Length: 233
Image (cartoon, rainbow, N blue to C red; front, top):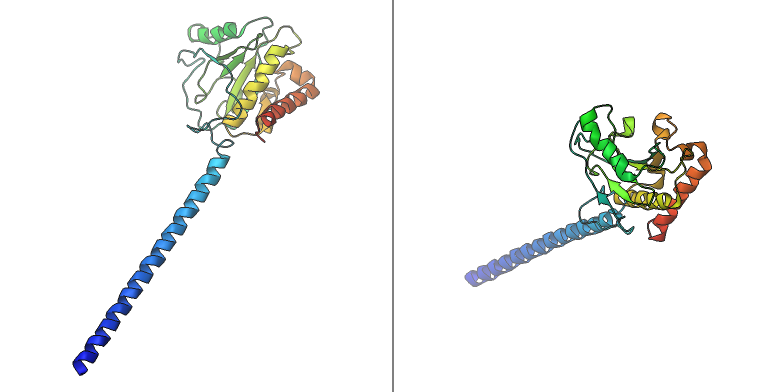
């Protein structure tokens, strides 16, 4: 009898230990599942914010359509394209060429020729022409020589002008609004991160937007409206 009793107790003990093992396994599995769900939720939240703060993250598709770009990259040289990495984009700086009547390509070629003339150091990531064409001179992952102390963390846009007032014609204006809005979304910026060269150095550039601050405020409002039109708040 004692032998049978001992066997029954042993079986009970074994069953109890098995139950505990199964319970522990279930608890561990539940904990792992909770962790996985938490990571998935966090990843989804990050993904929802990627459009504004992605810093040009690969695979992200902007809501604002990419403007048509004529990519005419400058030759790498120390006077206009030093090929220094732009680690992070914190703003977009608007400039004007101060050369009335000149085209986007003419200004691009001026930057290119600096490698031979060595007269100064100057360039811009983009130049918007009198017909609304956009020429890209510098990759957006490299610095340009345009915005002085903000070269290290901004994208520069030069804008062509028709006359000494420095006012953009409608084609140029519309293209700059589109380009600025796209860059704001692409690099996860705010419209308040779009600034004038004047705001960096006090230089009257772009002239019309310095002479008429209300025109600048309207420009920023138009950039914001462009973003909102594509569902970017």
